[in-house]
Length: 229
Image 1 (cartoon, helix red, strand yellow):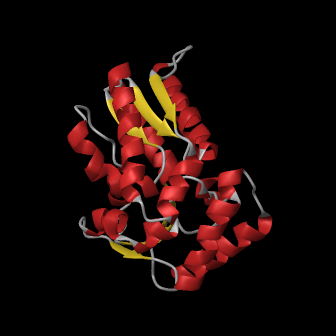
Image 2: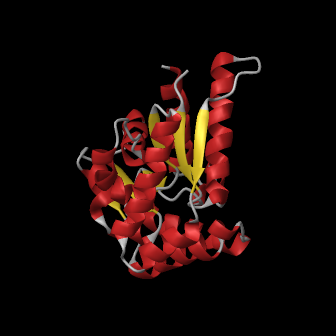
Image 3: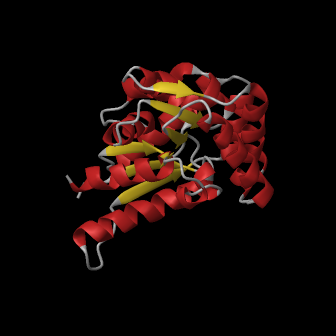
């Protein structure tokens, strides 16, 4: 079994889902008392979010570089960054590493292609929805990406940072997100990317008829499978 290096804590609420999912997949594949070989480096999300909100991506990249180097030194065979937004700094991290980073957007593309999705909506932080670092990976594979209108993007961003990252789950916030999804459905989308690792804590597939692509589950499941190859 290969060792997974997890960079978590962004937020730790969704890192729990990563750890649980990875171990569930390994147990299903190998049976018995098997569990995953993984190492977790959990950062202080307050520091990361401060860098994000002040547009200091270099400092946030430095934090993740040090985390990744620690995991590499500890024996990780590949890195999993347990968040969507911070994949923005992956190009800054790679030159410092001798092990690969399992990119969450690339794994999401794989899941979209498996379902023959050609037009998809993207929900996430404002950084993920509005900037190109994430969308471009998907668009480059010939898949159209739609994002909510500005007012709705702000609503989703607030729900993520002011509620979900703090472990707060509100039924009204679920309704807001589902209403936004319904508006996007009217634009002809074939699926919705839950492009923030916390959104899956609020919305699940049984809440809507449109196919959902929960990036947390996709990423964690792929990490587990890769560890067994």
